[in-house]
Image 1 (cartoon, rainbow, N blue to C red):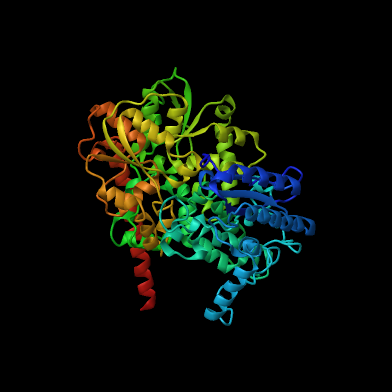
Image 2 (spheres, rainbow, N blue to C red):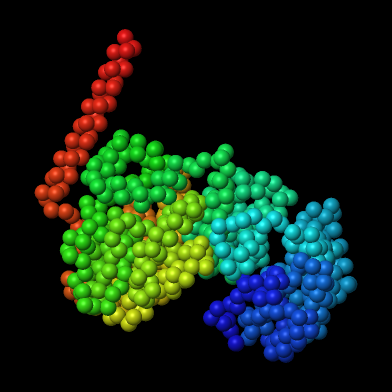
Length: 640
């Protein structure tokens, strides 16, 4: 039968309200008896009232089960034990193996006597005694094992506190404690190779506390209160979460959908509620980057002068808590919203409307990407609608626990977009991490808001929009290296991007594994530069360096593109929309050599307006300098 496309998920609370906790079991039987074994095991499950599903290498006789056991009550634990004993008898009767892949551990060791018999187990016991006479090496496993129903993570005494939380945790019945025990220890987050996104920090440090599993365990211990006794104020938990990139890889890669970015945001929200806790400087600098960008948009030249000039740049980085090795991004001469308004709005007033969300990054930094997105949609005959005034999804706020502010931002988004949301107008995102807020964080913070639900259902990543509505892209021949933003992988996947590029005529290498390492603002934070680059070196950066000059590097994420530039790869990644603009303006064979050279420049105000802005900036700078000089002279005079 082979592997199903998706493994069965048992991560929702049953409707009767009783908590059943996922358990893992695996076994192996002779391949020619697999069908008989599965039928009989289902009978055993039915006899004990156990629910779950099976999958595995059926042709090889290796069977995995995802079963739900009640491990909180005495009756539930007794049922668990009775089922395990009957399942062990069944496997042994068919000449199979109790454990097929995941080892014996404590769950199955007590059953090994059914498989090997007492005489062989006694030989194992004597062998272990020779090499480990003091019984120090992994005691309680294989021989003289602990009982399968003792030392349980839950048990009849499990009754953690249920503090009020900010997110809804709908898949956990609103119970944060349920979320913290979602991890069942499979350890897929501990794969050292960058095969999947999860878990970038573990791929670099190889420390358990930096794995999704390790962090989940610490949060469980925090609520239980036996080992970690200071709850939300725990420095141990904060330290483990500090290297979580909030990449959302675990939400899609973890077999039981542990959602560490949400748990991290929840923890930081409560951690910094204490008057004794103060957020670091970078939390404010990056968490409210949208507000800083609003100010910078008035005098972008002056701000860029301060952030790009040696000396002044160093001071700016120190003030914001940014690693000194990180170049600061330049603000655009003109915002995307300003460009759109100056051109008179959409070029297709009679077309079907679509809202293009002006995220902070493409509105204030990569405005050339925004222009390309507008023109790509309009080239397909659609009417682009761009919200006016300040609007922000609040993406960076979650990384630092500013959840009350993030909720206010979301309400403002809903108020601004409500007519479009209710009319069913598609909402398209240019920046994957910002669009992901509408697919992920929005229903988590506003679970009972119908307009929030409508926005979640009608929000599309850029390529996803083209694929969903069957829009044909322009033709472009050549090769492309496609890199997906982690949040897009988790909230829509990269298949739409790959299909869109292939429809254009490109030969696509869809690169997978790990994270770019910048992860929004995470890689900018002081002290994170080294591990940030190490994360990127797991997959992305070597692939970009190896890409030939005729291969377009495609990455829609602002942080991904920034990391590629900061790593000194010599390449600049293009947004999918920029490739489409390249095809329309330069023809089907326009990727011959470093296609990013033909990328869309950032729009600029007229020369006269730029000169006026520069003069104003110089006047302000001169006034500030004069005031500072005068104050210094007066201070010196008083000191004489």
